[in-house]
Every structure is written in C-alpha cells, then in structure tokens.
Image (cartoon, helix red, strand yellow):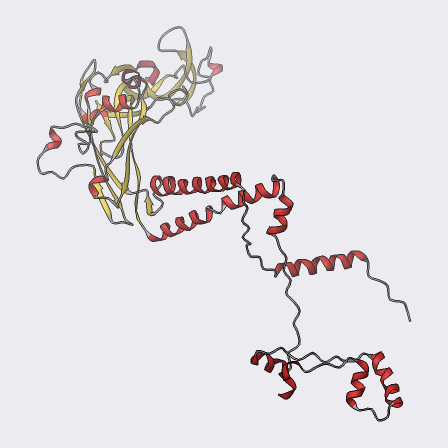
Amino acid sequence: MAAVEPKPPETSAARRLARGCWSAFWDYETPKVVVVKDRPLGVVYRAVQLLILLYFVWYVFIVQKSYQDRETGPESSVITKVKGISISEHKVWDVEEYVKPPEGGSVFSIITRIEVTPSQTLGTCPESIRVSNASCDSDEDCKAGELDMLGNGLRTGRCVPYYYGPSKTCEVSAWCPVEDGASVSQFLGKMAPNFTILIKNSIHYPKFRFSKGNIASRKDNYLKHCTFDELSDLYCPIFKLGFIVQAAGENFTELAHKGGVIGVIINWDCDLDLSASKCNPKYSFRRLDPKHVPASSGYNFRFAKYYNVNGTTSRTLIKAYGIRIDVIVHGQAGKFSLIPTIINLATALTSIGVGSFLCDWILLTFMNKNKVYSHKKFDKVCTPPKQATASWPVTLALVLGQAPPPTPHHPSASQLSARPKQMVDGPGATVGQWFSASEPPQQDPKGLAQL
C-alpha cells in the first residue's frame, strides 16, 4: 500500500486559524466592574462626563431644541407692488414704464438708467465697431453673407464709413442705426430712492397646519400711512428702495448707474410650542451679484417699443440698467415630539460612556500599573465539561441534606488481571473480600446504607 502523504503545515495552520475564529465568534463578552482608587483619574472621568452632559443639555436640547419635530422650507407666496414717479432729462416716468415685469412677482426690476436708440428701421448700415472683425479697410475685408452671432445683422460685403470718426466697418443688413451708433443715455435714479415697495408674504407649514402672513390683521387702512420699522411697524412691509440699498451696504448712485441684484430675505423661524404671536418674520438685505468681478457685476437688459410711421415699421431700442429685487423666503418650524426626545436622550446616555473609554485607554496606556489593571479587567472563563448524571443514591442524599456516598472505584485492566490470582489463592474468599483486596474498606457515612 502507498504511504499516506502528510498534510502540509500551511493547511493545518489555516484550519486551526479558521476553527479559532469560528469559536471566538460565539464567545460572549460582559463588562467587568473594577474600582480604581486614583484621584486624578477620577477627576478626568467626572470632568469628561460633565462636559458631555453640558453639551447635550445646553447645546442639543436648549440651543438646537432637538426635542422638537421640525419642518423646513415653508410653502410661500409673494406679491409685490411698487409706487413712485421719477423724471429724466426728457420725460416723466411712472410705475408702468420703469418696473419690469409689471405682474408683481417675487422677482422684478426697477429701471434707473437707460440708453435709447430711437427710430430704428430695417435697412443697411455700418456694423458696431465693438464687434470683433467688424473693422475694415476695403470690401475685400468683408465677406458677403457672413453672420456673426455677437453682431447686429447679416454682412453685405461692403466696407463703409462708421457713424463718426475716420474708422470703417463692414456694412450689415439689420435694424439701423445699430445701438452703438446713435444711443442716448438717460438717468432715472434721481427720485428712485423714494420709491416704495410693498411685499406681501404668506407662509404655511403643512406638517403642523400653521399659516401666517407678514401683514397685520387690522380693519383700518394703516398700510397707507406706514413704512417698515423693525421695532414699531414690523407688520408694515412697505420698504423704500433707498432703505433696501442702504441696508444691503451699497451706494445708491453707483448701483443705479451700473445696475445690480439685491436680495430681500424673509426668514420665518417659528417655535410652535409657544403662541403664534411669537412667530415673526425677520428681514435681511444683501447684494447677490458679485460686484468685485467686473465681468459679472451689474445688471442690464434690452427691450424695444415698436410703432408704425407712414407704413414703415420702426422701433425704439432701450438698454435698461436697474436694480433687480429678489424676494427669498425660507425658514423652519419646530414642535415638541416624543420620538426625537427619546432618540436624543438615548444618545446622551450612551455618549456618557465615552468617559469610561477614555479612562480605560489612559489606564492601559500611560499608568505605571497598566499590566495589573489589564489582568484585573480582562478575564477568560471557559465553560466546564458536562458531567455524568448522578445516580439515585447521590440524588437522594442531596435531597435529605446528607453527604453523598463515595463514588465506586472501577478497577483498571491491570487490577482485573491480578484479581484472579487472589481468588485462586483464597478460593473461599467472598465478593467483599475480593473488593477489599483492591481498595481499602470504607465506612458507611452517616448511616446511608440503612436506606
């Protein structure tokens, strides 16, 4: 027969490792309480517990109000209305002309300066000198039919003198004259700081079925005689445009010339555990466009007014600079709820155990007697092997409160081989004598044999 090849040691070691991991998976660990009489360590332990307790009591429960159920982002509606009259060098401007769009939504623009190009008609004229590749010296520099998406029209292939100066540009078929050739600037911002803006805002938190508005429920016409004041007229949401720009930290004259975007932010943070009168709007103002970046600062847009003269369609092109107002509403509401309270209490109680973890790490790492502490803290207890079921005399003796009888000694194989000799030498020996030859006689404890 072929000899059996021994298993490689790597395989047996891997099996022992796997068996050990599988056995350790079913181990049960329970904490062991060890009292360490060390004052500095006790001070650290109590200090950590106190800090954790203060964090949860002051910050989590008092500041953050984590015992409340919360809802963010209320349902909101905004209606705006602007009033005021302004004048420029040539005319008087009313609301219908300087507010765009006129619907009164949460985003609107107030025109403060315009560049007007009047009497434009469809025809041919020099391209704007600001357009790239528009300058030319001869017709060869202008390609007929070429369309520049940043230009004003379709090139005809001719090189013509510009509106003013000795320069020449390519001729285009467009609304003529183009904007840069005949625009006139008008400033409307002289009276603009006194424009009034009414901002009506209503919010609703559906989870808590709570609604409120920023206008007081009064029957008199108090809105006709008030303006916003944070202390005296919080529920009079009528703001002057100059006040809004000043509250945003901007210079009105500069902003009116270049344009810009101002955000009116209404914040509704409501603690619904209190009365509804404690839920009040908070207003803040800031500029939204990056004024320090020349490429993206300012605000302007274009629109045209069309009319017909002698059967010819004409238009007035207006490039408007203005102050755009964005009304932004946000907030959150909170109300007591049992579930977040229980969750945060459980988290607080669990976090207190961080003190024990920190002190254990200090003891096991930095203390002089860390090995002694480790020996005291970690014990390994193995389950004893199962014993054979006791016989009925032992059970009866335990019930009567007496000592159990001695366990019978079973002879070994060598003793069994020697006993026949004793029986041959003493043929008259009894069974009791046969046992006495192998073990000393035992007395009956407490008269158990009488049973």
